[in-house]
Image (cartoon, rainbow, N blue to C red; front, side):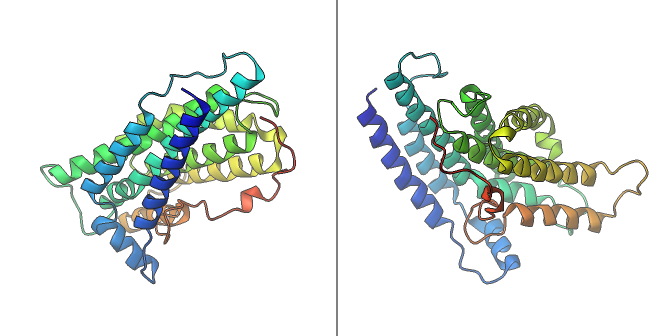
Length: 278
């Protein structure tokens, strides 16, 4: 694979990501209305399958990782572009599947559903599969960042890319824990890995520490909702659902654009953008 072919794939991927973003823009005026639209069909399954097929065609032919074994500065720069391409592929799939993950996680929080249905519908199974794929691509982000991270400013990709994608991944792990019955075992190890890797970046920027503290607070909030401390009374059904809906809103599930909380840039305040290190 040549550098030119990587550039071509990057351009095609940017076009696909732009299409996904535009297709998920919601014109509603209120958070409640936007959430209803998400639940109805923000990401139509046939369109999702078509876009995923395009992403798979871009991914085919990429050399397998890890990429840090190459020698020489030129090889290192090329490997950096390859791993960045893989990161963007995983992130784009997350963008594509996030509305379906939101629908799956929110569907069981409807207060009128006192008891689960006796049979799982085909639609519910499809939603769960798409939500699982979203979580798997979140785990892929973490694995890729772990492979290319070093304890100093040097690395196969710039350190601020690593923080950015770790934050995206960890936000989605928090969201996945809103359904611990499905994702609890699946995401716990990935969360611990992400905490460790992000923690190793603390000395590079104050934003890394702030970002990690905020994410851990959100994670603990969800854990406490599902398993309240022993000295506290269990929450009522209304309080339980309200607490989880509050987490969804905080994560950006009800946003007009599917940034998943990324519009909150306060964590970037202390990033030293003047220091470039590949």
